[in-house]
Length: 321
Image (cartoon, rainbow, N blue to C red; front, side, top):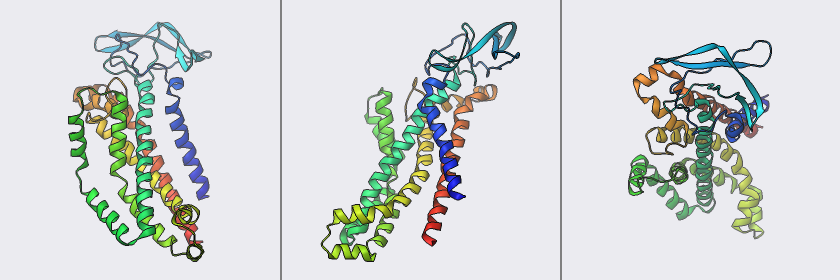
């Protein structure tokens, strides 16, 4: 039953990641495409008259918009490389637009690419560093273990937010979105390796004392063979569980840093820099759909945390059995 839950949650997360990966298919517009005649347009109302779904013409009316019921624009599916589109000159804003007339729904999907990729890559980097140092410390012990563990304690005390600010201050004022993305991944991923390293070290300390490992060592097996053949399989469950814990943390870290202006900048969207526009009170109160990136992050974060809980319970059951 628990394994079925794991697969269900994993499938839901996979669907969300697939939607982000194929944003060019699911998004009605490009992330930078502007409709200057429709700033802060509300979410579109899709109508159905028994045939093809359609939207009415949207006309500005002072600070608001109104539908022109005399003009309809039908929706099309799988046309021009888009899952759904509208007959021009009609517009289809499923979650409204921002101040530049850019479709929020499209930007949420494209922004998910940045935020989710940052979480996945930073977690992979953190786990790779943590697995290496944790395995070395646990397997060899002695002064190697002491040096790495004391170093990790020192590493945890460093003020990484101020380090990020300092690094950003030394860089040119304008850096490409790709450079900003990899800088963000490197710093976020480099910060969080200590906890997985300590957990993996504990697993390795236990695994290296198992009888068959001691027997293999007695027959002359080297460290590389012992780690690859006997120690590594024991570290996979804790590594996988840590991945499900770290990924949502790093997604949230990317959102926070981009919200503060330390991540990927405009016009490339991420959930963080999209939420930055909602910092203004008058924008937030009048155009609540600009909080859509935050709402999109909630099921992703909850899905990973639920998956982490299920995997942790499954690992405990396996150890008991």
